[in-house]
Amino acid sequence: MFAVIKTGGRQYRVVPDDVLEIGKIAGDVGTIVQLGEVLVVGGDTPVLGAPTVAGASVAAEVLDHKRGAKVIAFKKRRRKNSRRKRGYRDEITVIRVTEILTDGKAPSVGPRPKKEKAPVEAKTADGDTPAKKAPAKKASGETKAKAPAKKAAAKKPSKEQEA
Image (cartoon, rainbow, N blue to C red; front, top):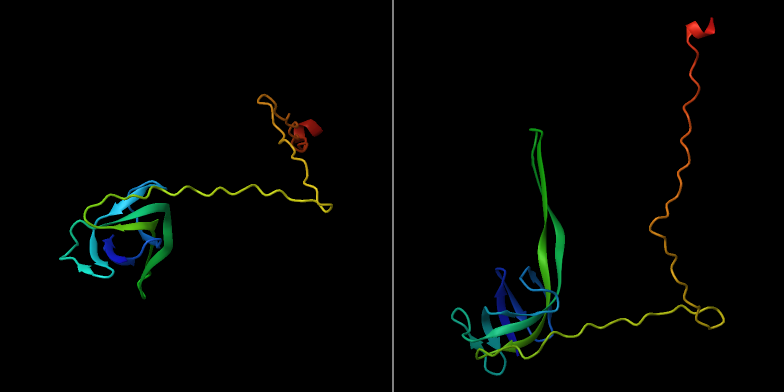
């Protein structure tokens, strides 16, 4: 089953477990959002919307918010000493499509648990794992004493002092 959704002025063909980069939408990382503008729901019997399919939506999990590639707009008027450089980066939301819903149903899948990486310990040449060392802590009141500043080079004696 697939769907064609519209968001941010663009259309995307999606299936469950697709990962997309779309224009920024509201939602914290890890939450489920519903995209309501579904233009087509395909499968055994495709349903075309006029302009959207009634009661259809797409549930997606927000994976990340980031910024796109830098785009530079450079304008130059030749022989006029006129140049303008302007750049921007699009705000992007990365989503994973969890399910395609029809008939006004609510999403049944909650946010997926994050996978935690197990700490990897480096092994020594003889195969033993080294003992962990506690990090050195600084006392809040300790500061290094500053060395006294060097004095400027001796000044030349004035004419009055020489005589």
